[in-house]
Image 1: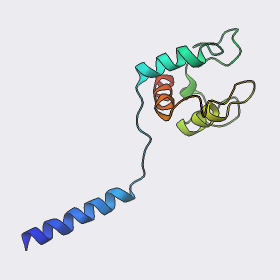
Image 2 (image 1 turned 180 degrees about the horizontal axis):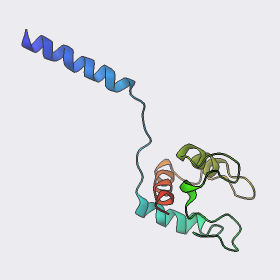
Image 3 (image 1 turned 120 degrees about the vertical axis):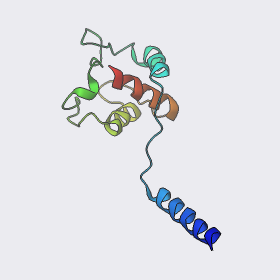
Image 4 (image 1 turned 180 degrees about the vertical axis):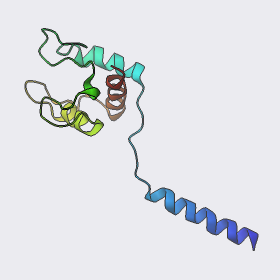
Length: 109
């Protein structure tokens, strides 16, 4: 009886876990700093400067991005993937892990 009850409880927990929203894996900010240096720093400075792209400092604290969208992981990732305003698309140039790392780093600025 107890084994049957435990089995039912375990099945219920697994069913519930499968229904929870899945989050993107957290990135490594240290690795993201290296991705930024290798791929982004050519056009983007940490603070506002005379570089081509906008400064990245406080990116996730801004009320909106240059495209008018709120600075969420999804909207920043979409910009990274699609590019725009002179920025090339990085959808196929960066792996999902590199993008996770980059987002983690940008959140620290």
